[in-house]
Image (cartoon, rainbow, N blue to C red; front, top):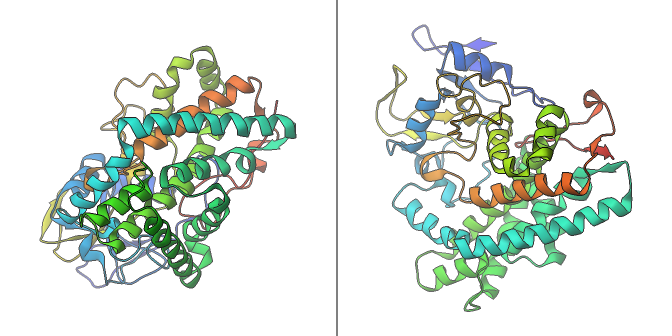
Length: 405
C-alpha cells in the first residue's frame, strides 16, 4: 500500500512491519534497498511521514553526519514503530555532540580493557553454571528460558552493579519496554519510569565506592559534574535495556541460525578459532530487529543518494539493509564464515554506535563456543517451522528454542 500527500510529493510507503519468523528478511526492506533506496515511509504510530535510507554508504552518511540531529527529535510526534520512544527524555539517545560526546565518554570507562576482561571471566562463569542447569534439566530443554534469558541478565547485572535478586525486575521492565508495539504507550512509559527510579537509587548508593560498575562510574560522573543525575539515569536505563533485551534476541537468533545451517556448525565445531569471525558474520546476516530504531531530523537540505531531504524532515536508517547491500557485501544473502571483508553495521555507525558492542561480542563468543563444547550433539527438538517467534517486539527472536542432544 502506498500513499501520497499531494500530487507533487514523493510516494510514501505504509510500513505495517510484519511479525517475521526465523531468519526471514522484511520483504518491503528488501525491495526498497534495490528499487527505492531513499524513500518516504509511514509507520504504525506517530504522525506524518519520514525518509528511509537503506543503502550502506547512505546509511553511514546519515548516521554520522552532524546535519542530521537526534536532539531535534524531542517533542515531535514522528511516525514510528512503537507507541512511545524507548530512550528516556534527555537520554544519550536524544543527544547530539558535544553533549553526546561528553556522555559517551563516561560510559566508555565501564568498557575499558580491564572491566571487559573481568566481564568476560564473569560471563564464562555464568555460562558454565547455566549449562550445568541445562544438563541437570535434561533433554529436551528450552534454551531461551535456561540460557538466553538469564545469561544477558547476569552479565548486564555485573556491568551495571544490579544485585542478583533484582534481576527479575530488570527482566520484567526490559520485556515491557522492548515489547512496546503490543504492550502500549502507558505500560511502556510506566516501565521506563520504574526503571529510572531504580537506577536513581542505585546510582545514589554507588557514590564514592570506587567500584568499576557502570552505576559507580555514573555516580562519579555526577559527583564531578560531568553528568547531571538525569543524564546518568537515562544512560543506565538505555544500556540496561540494550544489554538484556537485544542480547537475548540476538544470541537466540545466532544459535537458531547455526542449528539450521549444519555445514556452518560443523566448521565451528572443527575449528573453534573461527568463532570470532563467525560471530561477526552472524551479526551481519541475522535480521535482529523489526523495522528501524530512532529517527534523526535533517537540520538543513541534504542530498542523500541523489535525493534531497528537506530541512526539518525526519529520517530513518536501516542497518539491516546496509548489511545486505550487494555493493559492499558479495552475495549478501549467504551466510559466509570466509567473508574476507565484513564492515557490518549491526551495532550502528557514527556517534550513536552501540557503546556495549564489545561486550555483546564477548557474550556471543562465550555462548557459541561454550554451548557446543558442552553439548556437541545439540540440535533442535522441533522442526524449524514449529518454533514460536516473538510478536510485536522491537528485537526479533524465538519465544522458545527447544533443543535435544
